[in-house]
Image (cartoon, rainbow, N blue to C red):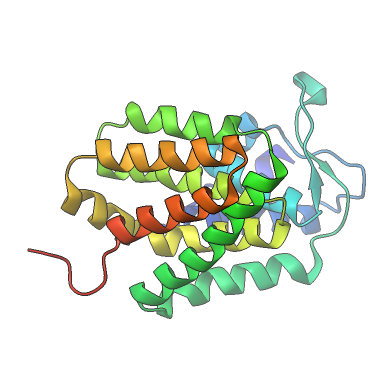
Length: 233
């Protein structure tokens, strides 16, 4: 099976990782209960970052295709619990179709989704460790692109914390379409300290179980990052 994994060559890493995992499940004749290679092994075989593999596996887990397993050696790797079916194909079509949307449409959709996700997360009182990890990684970012990578991870973690699997899938579908606009916004703003403070405010509101403040914090953050009208020169 190891020799069947081909290096990822497209720029849409997240989409290609998902597609290759689906293809391998079909071509290798994997059955319910079979185990995929571990995260590190998949990343090496696909020649992508472990974070890209991790995100793809999270989506497949959200869709009910895989069950994550913690372990080493033969115990490493997610377990197949159902066939991908049409759900993954529909997700990839959505991911590709987002390229035709205007930036304003993406931001409006993000605001609608993230306000709800932040409110739900605050009400649920979930584990916020993924949010904290992304926030800490922002502090260590060496430039706008790296900062945005962790920024996106933070916002995907909000969706996960909402407990709504469809919201989590949609947020991950939006990520590649949002990324270039987010990088431009960070470059325009310049100082990431204020953006980092915005994220801390969101995390604090969710941790405190304050849904109204969580929604306000998300709204204020997106309004600052993507102000209406043309960006200032």
